[in-house]
Length: 84
Image 1 (spheres, rainbow, N blue to C red):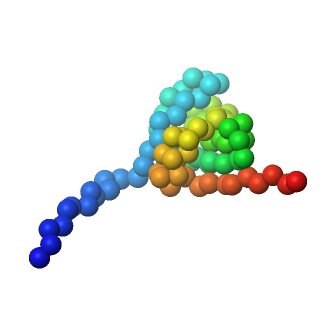
Image 2: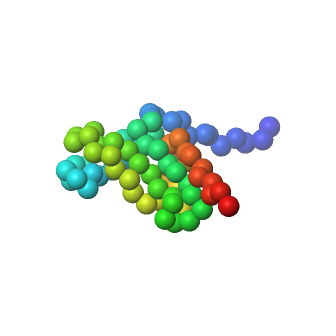
């Protein structure tokens, strides 16, 4: 019988640490509170959320590693296409 390795159990929902540039609040957000937009360049790839402390709309650039973490954590993703 082949040996099987254990699959790590998920303890709870994935939470992402975030900060608001307006009120300087620091908090954790669930995947459902974040949105990721992937564009054709670094300038058009970003994530966004609403600050739970002050209500500001926050938009921050997302590099390759951030995109990987957010998509892996279940954040809804919008792929932006340019029209030529």
